[in-house]
Image 1 (cartoon, rainbow, N blue to C red):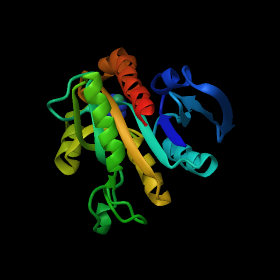
Image 2: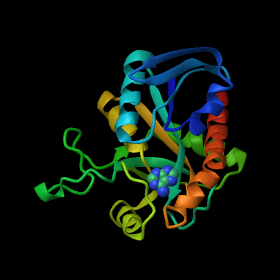
Image 3: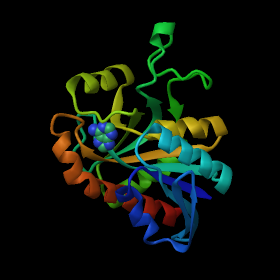
Length: 228
Ligand code: ADE
């Protein structure tokens, strides 16, 4: 079973709409829609925004639906200079940029317990996603995606995320899903389409381009499910 998590309705409704044999169950206030898409068994959930919502959703999927792969889809703020709105970033690793125990001598982003800053995405899922974006013809880069409970739109935030984490994109869920998957030894991937430049235009750009960018990530996942 493949689990697919988005934060907002715009990021998952396009998948729920084409699901066959659909069954919905609500656990911890999150709706889990299971069925088949393009012949593949999937469970799709709209987690809500932020790291805790995403973590609860990922853990529930793993325990209740026995997902062996979890993919996080949706939109992100672009940090890499080559990115334009609508482009795609496939994570090779993720980090929680707001995890900070540096006063205790840890590196920025260090997560005590799993004892690392970066959680590695599954190489096979990454390659499949890369092949799909190439087929569709969307400009795509592979790199670090960082997550935190903050909407990134200021120079000082952007500089921290590129300077410390060398991040290609910023969002609010992927790394917490990676964190949960790492704790459970479950393979995961993160695919994000750019809705804004994580800058002073983001307040306007995010609402304007969110659905268009979310649709790009949904198209890629549809193709992935066909190819799996
Ligand atoms: N998701 C989309 N754009 C974002 C931004 N600028 N910061 C955080 N998450 C986002």
